[in-house]
Length: 258
Image (tube, rainbow, N blue to C red):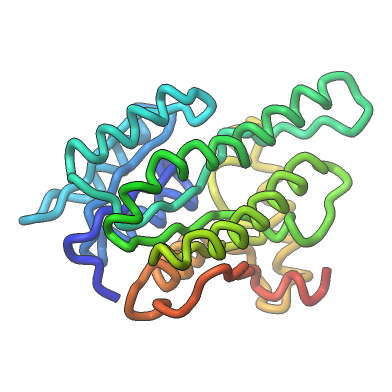
């Protein structure tokens, strides 16, 4: 897989899965745009992508719940690089808090999940699309196996990710004739800082690690690098030039025992 000269815009790339994707595509020669809501974390990821001849990493702060921020994100990408070849929609702006159905605050959480995990991706994609059409580029959406297996603790997340999967399929049909491929990577539980950052505790992640070790056929929790490898495969014109509309679980076999 060779991404020399390509430009990859990865949303939600200041930590976790998005960070791993950005670093992976960088390692394969791509120019990368790192974005999130925390300037310090953005800078740390940019620093990991050390400047090379004819290869750059651009950090842009953007809140995907703010349309103007998304407009500026795409505009700064084009100003810096002049094109977009790969769009990775790793929106995590919907938050991670769980509010049971029927409880006070549930509808607020529903709106947040739908806006962050689904609507924001519509906005990013719509703004980036003219540039992707020019380069015959491709889109990889980061969904979840939660789009396939219901979770009664967090219905809005499952609904948003199910909608994202359908968006992937619809856009694959719509954009195929324009030379743009659209695919999805659907992780299972993945070991990222988000659990501790949102809960202030390591216990949730520790319990997930144990659960995955005991129940997943491959006997471990997912790592961000697992998802990054899948994205690189799907984004590659050499590996996946005839693949579009694919919903790819990267789950250690979790769906087999769900």
